[in-house]
Image (cartoon, rainbow, N blue to C red; front, side, top):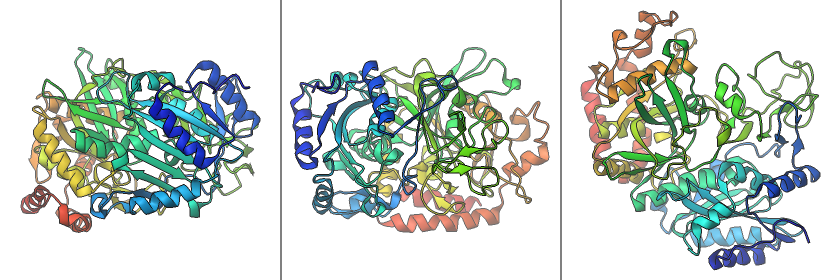
Length: 589
Protein backbone atom coordinates (compact mmCIF):
# COMPACT_ATOMS: atom_id res chain seq x y z
CA UNK A 1 0.00 0.00 0.00
CA UNK A 2 1.33 3.46 -0.92
CA UNK A 3 2.33 5.80 1.88
CA UNK A 4 0.17 8.72 0.69
CA UNK A 5 -3.46 9.34 -0.23
CA UNK A 6 -5.12 6.84 2.08
CA UNK A 7 -6.67 9.07 4.75
CA UNK A 8 -10.29 9.97 4.01
CA UNK A 9 -11.81 12.87 5.99
CA UNK A 10 -14.37 12.13 8.70
CA UNK A 11 -17.01 14.35 7.03
CA UNK A 12 -19.77 11.96 5.91
CA UNK A 13 -21.17 14.32 3.23
CA UNK A 14 -17.74 14.45 1.55
CA UNK A 15 -17.29 10.67 1.76
CA UNK A 16 -20.78 10.11 0.26
CA UNK A 17 -20.09 12.53 -2.62
CA UNK A 18 -16.79 10.82 -3.43
CA UNK A 19 -18.37 7.37 -3.20
CA UNK A 20 -21.17 8.33 -5.62
CA UNK A 21 -18.75 9.47 -8.32
CA UNK A 22 -16.24 6.69 -7.65
CA UNK A 23 -19.02 4.19 -8.46
CA UNK A 24 -19.76 6.11 -11.68
CA UNK A 25 -16.19 6.82 -12.86
CA UNK A 26 -14.67 3.52 -11.60
CA UNK A 27 -11.13 4.71 -10.81
CA UNK A 28 -8.42 2.19 -10.05
CA UNK A 29 -7.57 4.08 -6.89
CA UNK A 30 -8.88 7.02 -4.82
CA UNK A 31 -6.16 9.38 -3.59
CA UNK A 32 -7.23 11.66 -0.70
CA UNK A 33 -5.05 14.79 -0.69
CA UNK A 34 -4.00 16.31 2.65
CA UNK A 35 -1.84 19.21 1.39
CA UNK A 36 1.31 18.16 3.28
CA UNK A 37 4.85 18.90 2.07
CA UNK A 38 5.71 15.19 1.95
CA UNK A 39 2.68 14.52 -0.24
CA UNK A 40 3.74 17.38 -2.55
CA UNK A 41 7.21 15.86 -3.10
CA UNK A 42 5.69 12.44 -3.72
CA UNK A 43 3.19 13.80 -6.29
CA UNK A 44 5.79 15.82 -8.20
CA UNK A 45 8.03 12.76 -8.47
CA UNK A 46 5.10 10.65 -9.60
CA UNK A 47 4.10 13.28 -12.23
CA UNK A 48 7.67 13.26 -13.57
CA UNK A 49 7.75 9.44 -13.62
CA UNK A 50 4.45 9.36 -15.54
CA UNK A 51 5.70 11.94 -18.09
CA UNK A 52 3.06 14.52 -17.10
CA UNK A 53 5.71 16.98 -15.88
CA UNK A 54 9.34 17.66 -16.77
CA UNK A 55 11.63 18.69 -13.93
CA UNK A 56 13.27 21.98 -14.92
CA UNK A 57 16.85 23.11 -14.24
CA UNK A 58 16.81 23.07 -10.42
CA UNK A 59 19.80 25.40 -10.13
CA UNK A 60 18.08 28.12 -12.17
CA UNK A 61 14.47 27.33 -11.19
CA UNK A 62 14.34 25.41 -7.87
CA UNK A 63 11.12 23.50 -7.34
CA UNK A 64 9.87 24.33 -10.87
CA UNK A 65 8.26 21.96 -13.37
CA UNK A 66 7.04 22.05 -16.96
CA UNK A 67 3.84 20.76 -18.53
CA UNK A 68 2.74 20.57 -22.14
CA UNK A 69 -1.01 20.41 -22.76
CA UNK A 70 -2.72 18.79 -25.73
CA UNK A 71 -2.34 21.21 -28.71
CA UNK A 72 -6.14 21.33 -29.04
CA UNK A 73 -6.54 22.30 -25.36
CA UNK A 74 -4.78 25.61 -24.74
CA UNK A 75 -7.40 28.20 -23.66
CA UNK A 76 -10.77 28.72 -22.02
CA UNK A 77 -13.57 27.35 -24.19
CA UNK A 78 -16.52 29.69 -23.81
CA UNK A 79 -18.47 27.86 -26.55
CA UNK A 80 -18.42 24.67 -24.43
CA UNK A 81 -19.12 26.40 -21.10
CA UNK A 82 -22.68 26.04 -19.82
CA UNK A 83 -24.85 27.44 -17.05
CA UNK A 84 -27.64 24.95 -16.30
CA UNK A 85 -30.56 26.55 -14.46
CA UNK A 86 -34.19 25.35 -14.40
CA UNK A 87 -35.23 28.20 -16.72
CA UNK A 88 -33.18 29.50 -19.65
CA UNK A 89 -33.93 33.11 -18.70
CA UNK A 90 -32.00 32.64 -15.41
CA UNK A 91 -28.80 31.95 -17.37
CA UNK A 92 -29.53 34.84 -19.73
CA UNK A 93 -28.65 35.49 -23.36
CA UNK A 94 -24.87 35.87 -22.83
CA UNK A 95 -24.46 32.34 -21.42
CA UNK A 96 -24.84 28.93 -23.04
CA UNK A 97 -27.77 27.16 -21.39
CA UNK A 98 -28.96 23.57 -21.28
CA UNK A 99 -31.71 21.90 -19.20
CA UNK A 100 -30.03 20.66 -15.99
CA UNK A 101 -31.44 17.12 -16.00
CA UNK A 102 -30.58 16.41 -19.65
CA UNK A 103 -27.09 17.90 -19.34
CA UNK A 104 -26.40 15.98 -16.11
CA UNK A 105 -27.40 12.74 -17.84
CA UNK A 106 -25.15 13.51 -20.82
CA UNK A 107 -22.20 14.24 -18.51
CA UNK A 108 -22.81 11.15 -16.38
CA UNK A 109 -22.82 9.05 -19.57
CA UNK A 110 -19.42 10.53 -20.47
CA UNK A 111 -18.11 10.03 -16.90
CA UNK A 112 -19.26 6.39 -16.70
CA UNK A 113 -16.07 4.31 -16.47
CA UNK A 114 -13.98 7.34 -17.48
CA UNK A 115 -11.39 6.76 -14.75
CA UNK A 116 -10.80 3.04 -15.30
CA UNK A 117 -7.07 2.42 -14.83
CA UNK A 118 -6.65 5.99 -13.49
CA UNK A 119 -6.38 7.56 -10.05
CA UNK A 120 -9.20 9.74 -8.76
CA UNK A 121 -7.63 12.59 -6.78
CA UNK A 122 -9.90 14.01 -4.07
CA UNK A 123 -8.92 17.68 -3.72
CA UNK A 124 -10.44 19.49 -0.73
CA UNK A 125 -9.75 23.21 -1.13
CA UNK A 126 -10.56 26.50 0.55
CA UNK A 127 -11.16 29.67 -1.44
CA UNK A 128 -10.30 32.62 0.80
CA UNK A 129 -8.48 32.98 4.13
CA UNK A 130 -9.38 30.52 6.92
CA UNK A 131 -12.11 31.92 9.17
CA UNK A 132 -13.35 34.54 6.68
CA UNK A 133 -17.14 34.97 6.43
CA UNK A 134 -16.60 35.10 2.66
CA UNK A 135 -14.51 31.92 2.27
CA UNK A 136 -15.95 28.83 0.58
CA UNK A 137 -14.96 25.15 0.58
CA UNK A 138 -14.87 23.03 -2.55
CA UNK A 139 -14.17 19.34 -3.15
CA UNK A 140 -12.83 18.61 -6.63
CA UNK A 141 -12.50 15.07 -7.96
CA UNK A 142 -10.02 14.85 -10.83
CA UNK A 143 -8.15 12.15 -12.75
CA UNK A 144 -5.29 14.60 -13.45
CA UNK A 145 -2.21 14.82 -11.24
CA UNK A 146 -1.46 18.12 -13.04
CA UNK A 147 -4.78 19.50 -11.72
CA UNK A 148 -4.03 18.26 -8.20
CA UNK A 149 -0.62 20.00 -8.16
CA UNK A 150 -1.98 23.23 -9.66
CA UNK A 151 -4.88 23.34 -7.20
CA UNK A 152 -2.34 23.02 -4.42
CA UNK A 153 -0.78 26.30 -5.61
CA UNK A 154 -3.99 28.14 -6.55
CA UNK A 155 -6.01 27.40 -3.39
CA UNK A 156 -5.53 26.57 0.28
CA UNK A 157 -5.65 22.86 -0.27
CA UNK A 158 -5.97 19.79 1.96
CA UNK A 159 -6.41 19.66 5.73
CA UNK A 160 -7.03 23.43 5.98
CA UNK A 161 -10.18 23.03 3.86
CA UNK A 162 -11.43 20.02 5.84
CA UNK A 163 -10.84 21.92 9.10
CA UNK A 164 -12.88 24.85 7.76
CA UNK A 165 -15.73 22.56 6.66
CA UNK A 166 -15.71 20.45 9.86
CA UNK A 167 -18.87 18.28 9.68
CA UNK A 168 -20.81 20.66 7.44
CA UNK A 169 -22.35 19.83 4.08
CA UNK A 170 -22.09 23.33 2.54
CA UNK A 171 -19.37 22.78 -0.05
CA UNK A 172 -19.06 23.04 -3.82
CA UNK A 173 -18.94 19.66 -5.53
CA UNK A 174 -16.63 19.53 -8.54
CA UNK A 175 -15.98 16.60 -10.88
CA UNK A 176 -13.32 16.65 -13.60
CA UNK A 177 -12.27 13.96 -16.03
CA UNK A 178 -9.81 14.56 -18.86
CA UNK A 179 -11.42 11.76 -20.92
CA UNK A 180 -9.35 11.66 -24.16
CA UNK A 181 -9.12 15.47 -24.59
CA UNK A 182 -11.47 15.35 -27.57
CA UNK A 183 -12.82 18.89 -28.23
CA UNK A 184 -16.14 17.38 -29.37
CA UNK A 185 -16.61 15.91 -25.89
CA UNK A 186 -15.44 18.98 -23.97
CA UNK A 187 -17.95 20.53 -21.57
CA UNK A 188 -17.44 22.86 -18.60
CA UNK A 189 -20.81 22.87 -16.90
CA UNK A 190 -22.16 24.76 -13.87
CA UNK A 191 -25.27 23.87 -11.88
CA UNK A 192 -25.66 26.98 -9.67
CA UNK A 193 -28.72 25.77 -7.73
CA UNK A 194 -26.84 22.60 -6.77
CA UNK A 195 -23.50 24.37 -6.19
CA UNK A 196 -21.93 21.84 -8.56
CA UNK A 197 -19.41 21.95 -11.43
CA UNK A 198 -18.70 19.12 -13.89
CA UNK A 199 -15.85 19.44 -16.40
CA UNK A 200 -14.95 16.84 -19.01
CA UNK A 201 -12.64 16.60 -22.01
CA UNK A 202 -10.05 19.25 -21.07
CA UNK A 203 -6.85 19.26 -19.06
CA UNK A 204 -6.17 22.99 -19.26
CA UNK A 205 -6.25 25.88 -16.78
CA UNK A 206 -9.54 27.51 -15.92
CA UNK A 207 -11.43 24.63 -17.56
CA UNK A 208 -10.16 22.18 -14.94
CA UNK A 209 -8.87 24.13 -11.91
CA UNK A 210 -12.46 24.29 -10.73
CA UNK A 211 -11.83 26.69 -7.84
CA UNK A 212 -10.67 29.35 -10.27
CA UNK A 213 -13.15 30.74 -12.82
CA UNK A 214 -15.84 28.09 -12.21
CA UNK A 215 -16.35 28.46 -8.44
CA UNK A 216 -14.68 31.82 -7.77
CA UNK A 217 -16.66 33.61 -10.50
CA UNK A 218 -19.52 31.72 -12.18
CA UNK A 219 -20.88 29.93 -9.11
CA UNK A 220 -19.55 32.70 -6.83
CA UNK A 221 -21.46 35.40 -8.72
CA UNK A 222 -24.68 33.38 -8.34
CA UNK A 223 -24.11 32.77 -4.61
CA UNK A 224 -23.13 36.42 -4.13
CA UNK A 225 -26.37 37.63 -5.66
CA UNK A 226 -28.41 35.43 -3.30
CA UNK A 227 -26.26 36.11 -0.21
CA UNK A 228 -25.63 39.85 -0.66
CA UNK A 229 -21.99 39.97 -1.78
CA UNK A 230 -20.05 40.27 -5.06
CA UNK A 231 -17.75 37.84 -6.88
CA UNK A 232 -15.76 39.89 -9.40
CA UNK A 233 -13.03 39.38 -12.02
CA UNK A 234 -10.83 41.98 -10.30
CA UNK A 235 -7.29 42.46 -9.07
CA UNK A 236 -6.79 43.93 -5.60
CA UNK A 237 -3.85 46.19 -4.76
CA UNK A 238 -2.75 48.37 -1.87
CA UNK A 239 -1.21 51.81 -2.50
CA UNK A 240 0.70 53.42 0.38
CA UNK A 241 2.05 56.98 0.35
CA UNK A 242 5.41 57.96 1.89
CA UNK A 243 3.38 59.43 4.78
CA UNK A 244 1.88 55.98 5.49
CA UNK A 245 -1.64 56.62 4.15
CA UNK A 246 -2.97 53.35 2.69
CA UNK A 247 -5.78 52.78 0.20
CA UNK A 248 -7.00 49.62 -1.49
CA UNK A 249 -8.14 49.51 -5.11
CA UNK A 250 -10.08 46.84 -7.03
CA UNK A 251 -9.71 46.79 -10.82
CA UNK A 252 -11.45 44.80 -13.56
CA UNK A 253 -9.59 44.26 -16.84
CA UNK A 254 -10.35 41.51 -19.38
CA UNK A 255 -7.72 38.74 -19.60
CA UNK A 256 -4.32 39.78 -21.05
CA UNK A 257 -5.01 43.50 -20.57
CA UNK A 258 -2.35 44.10 -17.92
CA UNK A 259 -4.08 42.89 -14.76
CA UNK A 260 -1.09 41.07 -13.27
CA UNK A 261 1.20 43.97 -14.24
CA UNK A 262 -1.08 46.48 -12.48
CA UNK A 263 -1.51 44.24 -9.41
CA UNK A 264 2.29 44.03 -9.05
CA UNK A 265 3.13 47.56 -10.23
CA UNK A 266 6.49 49.02 -9.23
CA UNK A 267 6.35 52.83 -8.93
CA UNK A 268 8.79 54.79 -11.16
CA UNK A 269 11.72 56.77 -9.59
CA UNK A 270 9.55 59.90 -9.44
CA UNK A 271 7.41 58.13 -6.82
CA UNK A 272 10.18 57.12 -4.46
CA UNK A 273 8.73 56.15 -1.09
CA UNK A 274 5.39 55.00 -2.53
CA UNK A 275 4.58 51.29 -2.13
CA UNK A 276 2.26 49.10 -4.18
CA UNK A 277 1.30 45.79 -2.59
CA UNK A 278 -0.69 42.89 -4.06
CA UNK A 279 -3.76 41.32 -2.46
CA UNK A 280 -4.73 39.48 -5.67
CA UNK A 281 -4.23 39.60 -9.43
CA UNK A 282 -7.47 38.09 -10.74
CA UNK A 283 -10.47 37.65 -8.44
CA UNK A 284 -12.10 39.67 -5.65
CA UNK A 285 -14.92 38.65 -3.35
CA UNK A 286 -16.48 41.75 -1.76
CA UNK A 287 -19.09 42.43 0.92
CA UNK A 288 -20.32 45.47 2.86
CA UNK A 289 -18.62 45.83 6.26
CA UNK A 290 -20.16 46.95 9.55
CA UNK A 291 -18.54 50.38 9.10
CA UNK A 292 -20.39 51.06 5.83
CA UNK A 293 -17.41 50.42 3.54
CA UNK A 294 -16.93 47.66 0.96
CA UNK A 295 -14.44 44.94 2.02
CA UNK A 296 -12.66 42.51 -0.30
CA UNK A 297 -10.69 39.27 -0.07
CA UNK A 298 -8.69 37.42 -2.72
CA UNK A 299 -10.13 33.88 -2.69
CA UNK A 300 -7.04 32.46 -4.44
CA UNK A 301 -3.63 31.47 -3.06
CA UNK A 302 -1.56 31.69 -6.25
CA UNK A 303 -1.15 33.35 -9.63
CA UNK A 304 -2.11 31.73 -12.94
CA UNK A 305 -0.50 34.32 -15.21
CA UNK A 306 0.11 34.70 -18.93
CA UNK A 307 3.83 34.18 -19.61
CA UNK A 308 4.42 35.91 -23.01
CA UNK A 309 5.26 39.58 -22.48
CA UNK A 310 6.18 39.03 -18.82
CA UNK A 311 9.74 40.28 -18.25
CA UNK A 312 11.91 42.29 -15.86
CA UNK A 313 10.71 45.57 -17.39
CA UNK A 314 6.98 44.84 -17.64
CA UNK A 315 6.61 43.02 -14.32
CA UNK A 316 9.67 42.50 -12.08
CA UNK A 317 7.55 41.21 -9.17
CA UNK A 318 5.97 38.52 -11.36
CA UNK A 319 9.44 37.52 -12.55
CA UNK A 320 10.58 37.19 -8.91
CA UNK A 321 7.42 35.22 -8.09
CA UNK A 322 8.07 32.59 -10.78
CA UNK A 323 11.71 31.84 -9.95
CA UNK A 324 10.80 28.89 -7.71
CA UNK A 325 8.03 26.37 -6.91
CA UNK A 326 6.22 27.24 -10.16
CA UNK A 327 4.52 25.09 -12.80
CA UNK A 328 5.00 26.36 -16.37
CA UNK A 329 2.51 25.32 -19.05
CA UNK A 330 3.06 25.55 -22.84
CA UNK A 331 6.12 27.83 -22.75
CA UNK A 332 9.29 26.88 -24.69
CA UNK A 333 12.26 24.97 -23.24
CA UNK A 334 15.94 25.81 -23.60
CA UNK A 335 18.60 23.15 -24.07
CA UNK A 336 19.54 23.31 -20.37
CA UNK A 337 15.90 22.96 -19.23
CA UNK A 338 15.24 26.63 -18.54
CA UNK A 339 12.02 28.28 -19.81
CA UNK A 340 11.58 30.86 -22.55
CA UNK A 341 8.73 32.78 -24.18
CA UNK A 342 8.26 35.68 -26.56
CA UNK A 343 8.96 38.95 -24.76
CA UNK A 344 11.31 37.39 -22.18
CA UNK A 345 14.52 39.29 -21.38
CA UNK A 346 17.78 38.67 -23.21
CA UNK A 347 18.61 37.46 -26.71
CA UNK A 348 16.38 34.93 -28.44
CA UNK A 349 17.98 31.47 -28.02
CA UNK A 350 19.33 29.82 -31.17
CA UNK A 351 17.72 26.48 -30.30
CA UNK A 352 14.58 25.71 -28.31
CA UNK A 353 11.97 23.02 -27.93
CA UNK A 354 8.65 24.70 -28.66
CA UNK A 355 5.39 24.32 -26.72
CA UNK A 356 4.38 21.40 -28.95
CA UNK A 357 7.63 19.55 -28.22
CA UNK A 358 9.24 20.24 -31.62
CA UNK A 359 12.72 21.67 -32.32
CA UNK A 360 12.56 25.45 -32.83
CA UNK A 361 14.93 28.13 -34.15
CA UNK A 362 14.36 31.86 -34.78
CA UNK A 363 13.82 30.92 -38.46
CA UNK A 364 10.91 28.60 -37.63
CA UNK A 365 8.31 31.26 -38.40
CA UNK A 366 6.04 30.20 -35.51
CA UNK A 367 5.95 31.25 -31.88
CA UNK A 368 8.06 29.08 -29.57
CA UNK A 369 5.69 29.56 -26.61
CA UNK A 370 1.93 29.44 -27.02
CA UNK A 371 0.49 33.02 -26.83
CA UNK A 372 -1.63 31.86 -23.86
CA UNK A 373 1.14 29.88 -22.13
CA UNK A 374 1.01 30.19 -18.35
CA UNK A 375 2.78 30.06 -15.02
CA UNK A 376 1.22 28.86 -11.77
CA UNK A 377 3.10 30.47 -8.88
CA UNK A 378 2.41 30.48 -5.11
CA UNK A 379 1.23 33.79 -3.64
CA UNK A 380 3.93 33.92 -0.89
CA UNK A 381 6.60 34.13 -3.66
CA UNK A 382 5.46 37.68 -4.49
CA UNK A 383 7.88 40.17 -2.85
CA UNK A 384 5.11 42.82 -2.92
CA UNK A 385 2.51 40.67 -1.13
CA UNK A 386 0.28 42.83 1.06
CA UNK A 387 0.52 42.06 4.81
CA UNK A 388 -3.33 42.00 5.01
CA UNK A 389 -3.71 39.29 2.35
CA UNK A 390 -4.85 36.69 4.90
CA UNK A 391 -7.04 39.05 6.96
CA UNK A 392 -10.37 37.16 7.27
CA UNK A 393 -12.27 40.49 7.30
CA UNK A 394 -10.71 41.58 3.99
CA UNK A 395 -9.50 45.09 3.12
CA UNK A 396 -11.60 48.28 2.65
CA UNK A 397 -11.92 49.34 -1.00
CA UNK A 398 -11.53 53.05 -1.86
CA UNK A 399 -11.78 52.80 -5.66
CA UNK A 400 -13.10 50.42 -8.31
CA UNK A 401 -11.40 50.68 -11.72
CA UNK A 402 -12.67 49.35 -15.05
CA UNK A 403 -10.39 49.17 -18.08
CA UNK A 404 -10.08 47.51 -21.47
CA UNK A 405 -7.76 47.48 -24.44
CA UNK A 406 -8.98 50.24 -26.80
CA UNK A 407 -6.95 51.89 -29.56
CA UNK A 408 -9.36 54.84 -29.91
CA UNK A 409 -12.35 56.65 -28.30
CA UNK A 410 -11.80 55.83 -24.60
CA UNK A 411 -9.62 58.31 -22.64
CA UNK A 412 -6.70 57.44 -20.36
CA UNK A 413 -8.76 57.99 -17.18
CA UNK A 414 -12.23 59.20 -16.27
CA UNK A 415 -14.14 59.16 -12.97
CA UNK A 416 -17.86 58.34 -12.90
CA UNK A 417 -20.17 61.03 -11.51
CA UNK A 418 -21.79 58.52 -9.10
CA UNK A 419 -22.25 54.77 -8.42
CA UNK A 420 -25.07 54.39 -10.95
CA UNK A 421 -23.04 55.97 -13.78
CA UNK A 422 -20.05 53.90 -12.66
CA UNK A 423 -22.12 50.73 -13.11
CA UNK A 424 -23.01 51.99 -16.61
CA UNK A 425 -19.30 52.56 -17.40
CA UNK A 426 -18.53 49.01 -16.26
CA UNK A 427 -21.54 47.54 -18.05
CA UNK A 428 -20.57 49.08 -21.40
CA UNK A 429 -16.87 48.27 -21.17
CA UNK A 430 -15.37 47.06 -24.44
CA UNK A 431 -12.01 45.49 -25.18
CA UNK A 432 -10.11 44.22 -28.19
CA UNK A 433 -9.91 40.44 -27.84
CA UNK A 434 -6.64 38.65 -26.96
CA UNK A 435 -5.31 35.07 -27.02
CA UNK A 436 -6.69 34.19 -23.55
CA UNK A 437 -9.98 33.07 -25.07
CA UNK A 438 -10.39 30.84 -28.12
CA UNK A 439 -11.49 32.79 -31.23
CA UNK A 440 -10.59 35.86 -33.30
CA UNK A 441 -8.05 38.33 -31.93
CA UNK A 442 -8.32 42.15 -32.16
CA UNK A 443 -12.10 42.64 -32.45
CA UNK A 444 -13.83 44.95 -29.97
CA UNK A 445 -16.16 42.91 -27.84
CA UNK A 446 -18.38 44.18 -25.03
CA UNK A 447 -17.15 42.68 -21.80
CA UNK A 448 -19.25 44.12 -18.96
CA UNK A 449 -17.13 44.44 -15.80
CA UNK A 450 -14.73 41.96 -17.53
CA UNK A 451 -17.35 39.35 -16.52
CA UNK A 452 -18.91 38.34 -19.85
CA UNK A 453 -17.39 34.81 -19.80
CA UNK A 454 -17.75 34.47 -16.02
CA UNK A 455 -21.18 35.68 -14.90
CA UNK A 456 -23.08 32.62 -13.69
CA UNK A 457 -26.53 34.06 -14.28
CA UNK A 458 -28.43 36.61 -16.40
CA UNK A 459 -26.11 39.56 -17.11
CA UNK A 460 -29.00 42.06 -16.93
CA UNK A 461 -29.85 40.79 -13.43
CA UNK A 462 -26.14 41.08 -12.59
CA UNK A 463 -26.30 44.82 -13.43
CA UNK A 464 -29.32 45.06 -11.10
CA UNK A 465 -27.28 43.34 -8.35
CA UNK A 466 -24.52 45.95 -8.79
CA UNK A 467 -27.06 48.78 -8.51
CA UNK A 468 -28.58 47.16 -5.40
CA UNK A 469 -25.15 46.71 -3.81
CA UNK A 470 -24.56 50.47 -4.20
CA UNK A 471 -27.60 51.05 -1.98
CA UNK A 472 -26.25 48.60 0.63
CA UNK A 473 -22.87 50.36 0.95
CA UNK A 474 -23.01 53.56 2.99
CA UNK A 475 -19.64 54.80 1.71
CA UNK A 476 -19.29 53.25 -1.76
CA UNK A 477 -15.91 53.30 -3.54
CA UNK A 478 -15.45 55.84 -6.33
CA UNK A 479 -15.59 54.26 -9.80
CA UNK A 480 -13.07 55.00 -12.59
CA UNK A 481 -12.43 53.85 -16.14
CA UNK A 482 -8.90 53.63 -17.60
CA UNK A 483 -7.40 52.80 -21.00
CA UNK A 484 -3.62 52.25 -21.13
CA UNK A 485 -3.78 51.22 -24.80
CA UNK A 486 -4.88 54.31 -26.76
CA UNK A 487 -2.91 54.83 -29.99
CA UNK A 488 -2.09 57.73 -32.30
CA UNK A 489 -2.90 57.81 -36.03
CA UNK A 490 0.34 55.93 -36.79
CA UNK A 491 -0.60 53.09 -34.43
CA UNK A 492 1.87 54.00 -31.64
CA UNK A 493 0.80 53.77 -28.00
CA UNK A 494 0.32 57.24 -26.53
CA UNK A 495 0.88 56.17 -22.92
CA UNK A 496 4.03 54.31 -21.71
CA UNK A 497 2.05 52.13 -19.27
CA UNK A 498 3.63 49.62 -16.83
CA UNK A 499 5.14 51.46 -13.82
CA UNK A 500 4.03 54.85 -15.17
CA UNK A 501 0.42 53.78 -14.50
CA UNK A 502 1.30 54.86 -10.95
CA UNK A 503 0.63 58.45 -12.09
CA UNK A 504 -2.96 57.59 -12.96
CA UNK A 505 -3.35 55.51 -9.81
CA UNK A 506 -2.18 58.43 -7.65
CA UNK A 507 -4.73 60.78 -9.23
CA UNK A 508 -7.50 58.24 -8.56
CA UNK A 509 -6.44 57.74 -4.93
CA UNK A 510 -6.17 61.52 -4.45
CA UNK A 511 -9.71 61.87 -5.81
CA UNK A 512 -10.89 59.27 -3.27
CA UNK A 513 -9.34 61.34 -0.49
CA UNK A 514 -10.71 64.67 -1.74
CA UNK A 515 -7.33 66.08 -2.74
CA UNK A 516 -7.07 66.09 -6.56
CA UNK A 517 -8.83 68.44 -8.94
CA UNK A 518 -10.64 67.41 -12.10
CA UNK A 519 -13.07 68.93 -14.55
CA UNK A 520 -16.50 67.85 -15.70
CA UNK A 521 -16.83 66.33 -19.19
CA UNK A 522 -19.80 64.60 -20.87
CA UNK A 523 -18.50 61.17 -19.80
CA UNK A 524 -17.27 61.97 -16.25
CA UNK A 525 -14.60 63.82 -14.25
CA UNK A 526 -11.18 64.02 -15.91
CA UNK A 527 -7.81 65.47 -14.90
CA UNK A 528 -6.42 68.55 -16.62
CA UNK A 529 -2.68 68.51 -17.43
CA UNK A 530 -1.97 70.44 -14.22
CA UNK A 531 -3.94 67.93 -12.09
CA UNK A 532 -1.67 65.12 -13.10
CA UNK A 533 1.95 64.50 -12.09
CA UNK A 534 3.92 64.19 -15.36
CA UNK A 535 7.29 65.27 -13.95
CA UNK A 536 10.13 63.17 -15.38
CA UNK A 537 7.90 61.77 -18.12
CA UNK A 538 9.16 63.92 -20.98
CA UNK A 539 7.61 61.77 -23.72
CA UNK A 540 4.09 62.66 -22.52
CA UNK A 541 3.86 66.31 -23.54
CA UNK A 542 0.74 68.38 -22.76
CA UNK A 543 -0.28 67.81 -26.43
CA UNK A 544 0.10 64.05 -26.03
CA UNK A 545 -1.93 64.09 -22.81
CA UNK A 546 -4.56 66.07 -24.68
CA UNK A 547 -4.66 63.31 -27.35
CA UNK A 548 -4.88 60.64 -24.62
CA UNK A 549 -7.83 62.42 -23.00
CA UNK A 550 -9.59 63.66 -26.14
CA UNK A 551 -13.33 63.04 -26.35
CA UNK A 552 -14.33 62.82 -30.01
CA UNK A 553 -18.11 63.25 -30.11
CA UNK A 554 -18.51 61.33 -33.40
CA UNK A 555 -16.49 58.40 -32.01
CA UNK A 556 -18.65 58.41 -28.88
CA UNK A 557 -21.88 58.41 -30.87
CA UNK A 558 -20.51 55.37 -32.76
CA UNK A 559 -19.59 53.83 -29.39
CA UNK A 560 -23.16 54.32 -28.13
CA UNK A 561 -24.53 52.59 -31.23
CA UNK A 562 -22.16 49.65 -30.61
CA UNK A 563 -23.30 49.48 -26.98
CA UNK A 564 -26.87 49.03 -28.22
CA UNK A 565 -25.97 45.57 -29.47
CA UNK A 566 -25.48 44.32 -25.90
CA UNK A 567 -28.39 46.30 -24.43
CA UNK A 568 -30.82 44.96 -27.04
CA UNK A 569 -29.69 41.42 -26.23
CA UNK A 570 -30.36 42.03 -22.52
CA UNK A 571 -33.34 44.37 -22.97
CA UNK A 572 -36.01 42.15 -21.41
CA UNK A 573 -34.44 42.40 -17.92
CA UNK A 574 -32.13 45.40 -18.36
CA UNK A 575 -32.42 47.78 -15.38
CA UNK A 576 -34.05 51.07 -16.40
CA UNK A 577 -31.10 52.92 -14.81
CA UNK A 578 -28.87 51.65 -17.62
CA UNK A 579 -31.23 53.12 -20.24
CA UNK A 580 -31.44 56.42 -18.30
CA UNK A 581 -27.64 56.64 -17.99
CA UNK A 582 -27.30 56.10 -21.73
CA UNK A 583 -29.87 58.84 -22.47
CA UNK A 584 -28.09 61.23 -20.08
CA UNK A 585 -24.79 60.56 -21.87
CA UNK A 586 -26.41 61.18 -25.27
CA UNK A 587 -27.83 64.48 -24.02
CA UNK A 588 -24.46 65.57 -22.56
CA UNK A 589 -22.70 64.78 -25.83
